[in-house]
Length: 113
Image 1 (tube, rainbow, N blue to C red):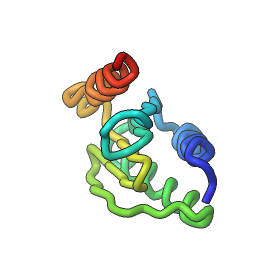
Image 2 (cartoon, rainbow, N blue to C red; image 1 turned 90 degrees about the horizontal axis):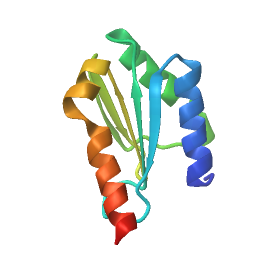
Image 3 (cartoon, rainbow, N blue to C red; image 1 turned 30 degrees about the vertical axis):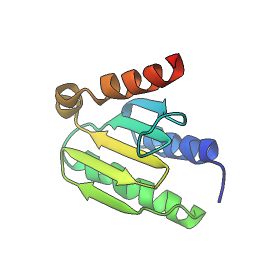
Image 4 (tube, rainbow, N blue to C red; image 1 turned 135 degrees about the vertical axis):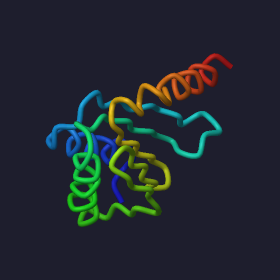
């Protein structure tokens, strides 16, 4: 299994190549969060959300990545890779749930301790 940063880079590359937008990676190594890294990306809407997830599975499974669980809809996909969580969502959901704010606060709080 490759190191976590290489895996994150591969995920970001697939998302970027397939036209995901506003891709952000949060490093939560030193927090009590359920994952070490969280990747958030916008889809262009509707079926693009699911298509991005399908591309991730098709590209990463042959490289040994294991998708432990996932929740998939047209608006939002969350994929659990154990130490990495991936959120792909339509821009409206991303705004509504403001995950970046929560994750940034979590990362900043831990680094301030």
